[in-house]
Length: 162
Image 1 (tube, rainbow, N blue to C red):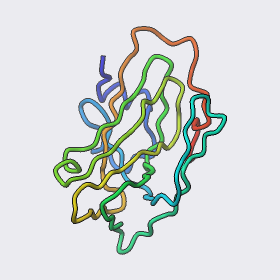
Image 2 (cartoon, rainbow, N blue to C red):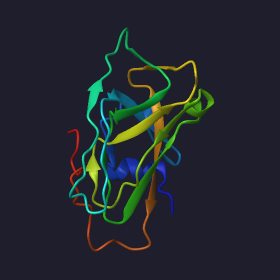
Image 3 (tube, helix red, strand yellow):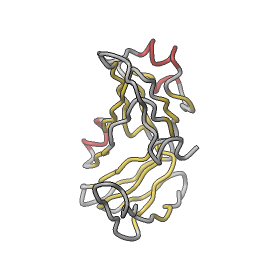
Image 4 (cartoon, rainbow, N blue to C red):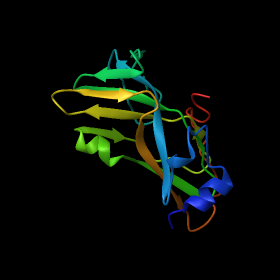
């Protein structure tokens, strides 16, 4: 079951929103806090013993805008989420991004995760993209699990970007 707006607001699953208009009938719009460019390769393995996350450098806002050439970027959302033990969340790109040749890739947010999440923004438009500070770029959708999980997310990203 997808959680409706009323339950999302009442349960305080998302904080640090900029405006009440971010709450949609079936989710919450997330907005751009920061954008980064990648500076080296990452390394991913099975058990994370050799994991090396790619380094990034911030992209400065000029007149409250970031100009992005075609490519891949790390973005951080303004909003801080808390996923309860009986739910999970998914994030999808807003349709305006897709119509502009941009997409947003997000991982599953497991029960127990909390943080100011990061995502992958991909600019496929050959002319690039311009994003305003706080632009709404994605929508989080919360789903209720059939039953409460017996354990929760305890990975290295829990509480990220406070």
